Length: 164
Image (cartoon, rainbow, N blue to C red):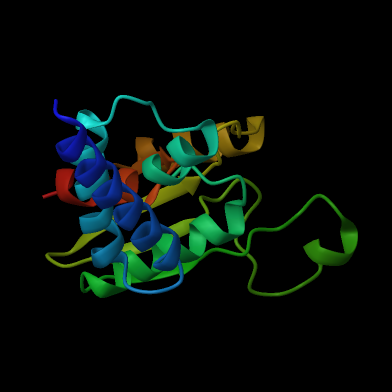
């Protein structure tokens, strides 16, 4: 690869990274396009992305709340009715609140076009499901519902596409 072409490729990759960083709180479709463009450009780049950069590209955030919000936005933009399920906690104060989902209920309940229902448990790259969550997910699956653990917006959209 010539020096001029390498400089142009790196410049394009830097612009793609800047696009990615600027869109987390904006249009998810634009973020996906920037993600794909970055992946294509990085394939030409001689240096691998940093650990933080890789987490950004792969959508594996350290903040579960931010990830849940990004997934909800992406699902709503695709015509779904989706909401975050505020499950009961083990504390007495929260358990007394009316309208809470049972302990272990998945984070996101998604009513997708075509009568599909999908339950998404959102975890960060290092997050694990609790015993209560695994028990509840098993109960829901025995009733015929899909429950999936997702770690990125892309994961969530793949689950949505797979439930046709």
